[in-house]
Length: 487
Ligand code: NAP
Ligand code: MG
Image (cartoon, rainbow, N blue to C red; front, side, top):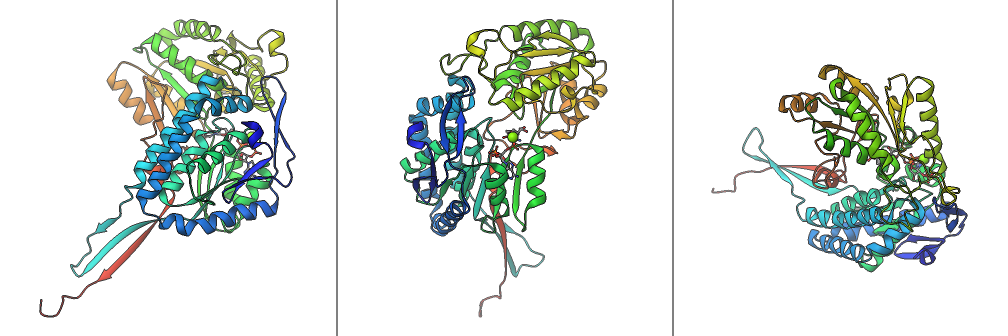
């Protein structure tokens, strides 16, 4: 599959050779180069935006049912090729093939969800102060969307934007992360197979600081839909040269609270899953855990055992591994820094703390799942997003203290609670200043419900009906009527 996409960009309905295919892409498990993609030139960016602009009128003018049909077909062709797309994702991102396959199938589900939302774009009629007026609110697509996406979920984070935008009637130019461009190009190829008209979807590649920045500043792009770090998100917001709609899905520093009544086994399993899955490279990964003092030591022992039991391996040759390599040297470096900082300030290392041993790990970005106890808020591990397979834990005495610790962060993406006491659950879920609170589960998001961050975790929503309305303008039409003569 890579050979079909190597050095290509998807512009105006054609998979074309990039003018300057200078960006190398590597397998994070072996360090081997797997291909090259283009650094989009000014002419290529212009061609993609022009193609999306030209396609906007016809696409937005289609009956919603027709747009819905295209999205259903896209979901079908993606699901039918899930195995090959999953292997491609593993090759560039590192997550084990089974996990990558799950992500591709969720992308297909997103296509079907928004295919169904597309036919439910209703307006509203609003009563006026007197009966001779009608106020109607229409929902109209914004126009051309520029989507800029990170590398941790190379398919889903493209899909939420692509499907919401297309359902609303928008067209889109996608710029995936430099280190995982092939999954996005593969999605572009599936748009061809699904018969989506030329120009409706375009995929251009290259460095964010150049290609992404040019999209932010481009007058022909009406909205930027960005997922990535808070630092780059703020830069994007500050650097737009004209007023533009923005959705910024940014970083997190997500807490978990385990109360004394919690089902300990379930809490430990949840903590292990959401701290270490995808090597912790998840915006809603659990970064820090606060445990009620009476069960603190038991929780520590069990989570350390769970972490030690996880299998780290090359996810391509070992599709059911628990953890593959990290996606690049950058998040691995930050993981090591946060570990060293916490240990120097008195944290106790209970599991992991190093790369796995063996020749097969020598060239990849591997790291063992790591558990740190007795952490405090003067450690980076408790206050910054690590984006690695490491979690810090601290005890608490009262629920008020637990909420204060959990909210002591500039971020507000997702939070987790394990408890069997309904009063405690109510108190905690109302008190947590986060876009999502997951209780007795660590699967915080579903495609049917809005998902977004507060504070430095961003603005705007993806998923659900809200994730489509983000791509629409409202238009208020107010009409004054006279009674017909003779009536
Ligand atoms: P990143 O460094 O912010 O990059 C995200 C995207 O922005 C990449 O495509 C990047 O391009 C591009 N970019 C970089 N500089 C840019 C600029 N000046 N103008 C326009 N685009 C620019 O984030 P990352 O390291 O890929 O991803 C990890 C971060 O994403 C974490 O903080 C994580 O929490 C966050 N995230 C948030 C969510 C959410 O839903 N809230 C979901 C997943 C991840 P290149 O990389 O190609 O240079
Ligand atoms: Mg980055």
